[in-house]
Length: 162
Image (cartoon, rainbow, N blue to C red; front, side, top):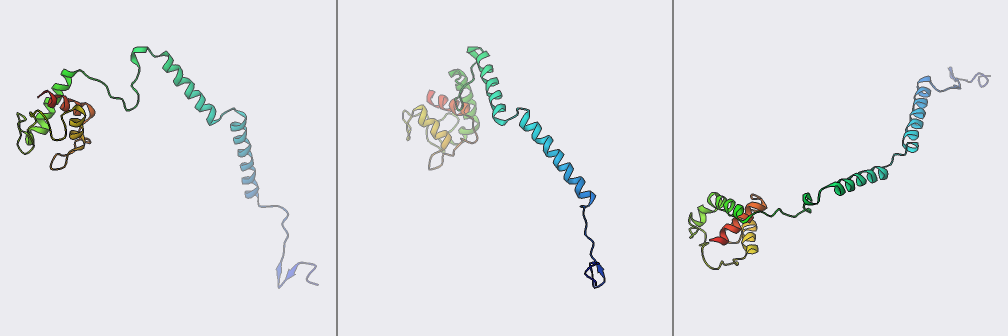
């Protein structure tokens, strides 16, 4: 009888008792790697919370050891400069960027006269800086992306001094 020999249509069926050596080797390497990985990360005391706590502690120590006069400004805070420095910077920027439209003497040209007592949108530091940074309808371009805060402040101080 063919069933006893596990022979069907001339094909002999062979029952394997072991998996191929390559698969057994890869499985054992994966198990050993997993044990080493778990041992390192679970038993070494490493954690992202612990690392964060160390970095926070170091930063607090650095801030505590820093001299009082050298405090760093808060985010978004701008350095205050001397008015004379701002005026000089503003005069230079005016000659480079503004004189073409407002005239070298600021008495007007394509743009309005900047020596007037009152401006159309107000002649306060805030409104002048806003006009320079954001621009105004009717021809005044925005310079916010081209000029730093210091340069806008310099132009503002210069224009208010005219």
